[in-house]
Image 1 (cartoon, rainbow, N blue to C red):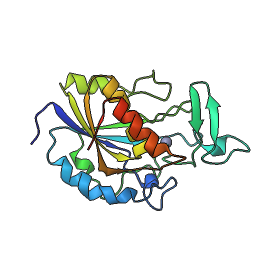
Image 2 (image 1 turned 120 degrees about the vertical axis):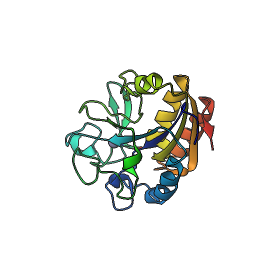
Image 3 (image 1 turned 30 degrees about the vertical axis):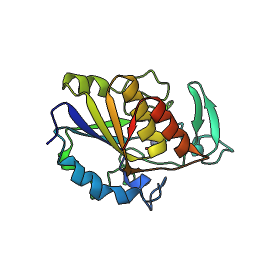
Amino acid sequence: MRPATDALIVIDVQNDFCPGGALAVPQGDMIVPGINALMDAFPAVILTQDWHPADHSSFASQHPGKAPMEMVEMPYGPQVLWPDHCVQGSDGAAFHADLRTDRADLVIRKGFRRAIDSYSAFFENDHATPTGLEGYLRSRGIERLVMVGLATDFCVNFSAVDAARLGFDVEVRMELARAIDLNGSLAAAQDGMRVAGVTLG
Ligand code: VGL
Ligand code: ZN
């Protein structure tokens, strides 16, 4: 068992990000057995869950004339438009059936405000509105984070960079993460994580 200062953060291992889902990440389901096995080494396991209202502003369906994967300018900056995904209470928003959710101390939901997307487990996409995860981790005395999950270049990336900026020691286990890889987003994410001081394991 790792020390009490270590936590495993499992990002968005949900049906919609797995093959057959609305925003399927190639091989997204292949990481589930490895994540389950890794949980045994951690005294703290936290899951994140992308959790959008049906009319969420990150959905292309809310922008007439726009298609999924196009960009728009939001008040908080550029935003990729996605297919409808992880709608609150839907099967697509549920965790992958094989993920050991019983091991989770905390499930943190994000993206529940219509007007703003939330890739990071720590802040919404304005990089200012907190989710509360920082306070939870600090009050438990957690200092070191290992991150895994979906998608490497979006929610894992944003979570890892924010955590490093907040002063946590962060490692992303790349073999237990999978990417969407939109227009070079995986390479850019890897560079950005390294610059932020994230260890890519
Ligand atoms: C994600 C796009 C939209 C992710 C969530 O989990 O990486 N990507 N919503
Ligand atoms: Zn989303």
